[in-house]
Image 1 (cartoon, rainbow, N blue to C red):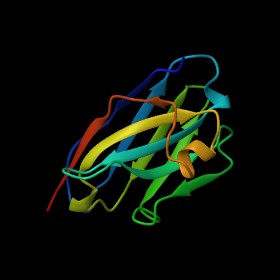
Image 2 (tube, one colour):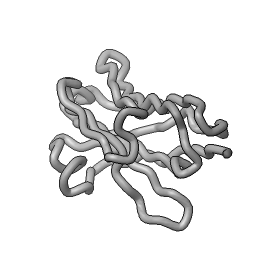
Image 3 (cartoon, rainbow, N blue to C red):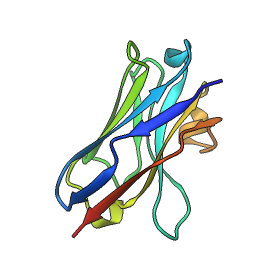
Image 4 (spheres, rainbow, N blue to C red):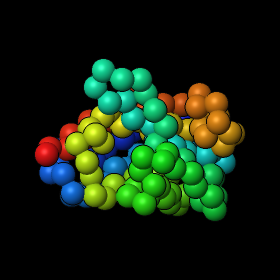
Length: 124
């Protein structure tokens, strides 16, 4: 069982940065691929970014490439999402997710474990 707790959400002006963190429980963090998803108001949840257990590979949605960076610290059981040049359309609830199979994050988009979400609001 993996429990995920996000933090770092809030209100930010367009063009500004924000960093989200996701702390994971358990001793098998490095064996889990990690990802971020988001759900904008009135829309379905969508993939944002993912990183393999070792951190060697990452994937991003086209809408955030070049602006967002996913990273992880396996010693701290934490994954991060650095968001720069934020836009109002980035406003959403951001969810951390985990799965032992990377494909579940980037292809089938159905990871086994989810956090409770953190709100990010970008004002224009």
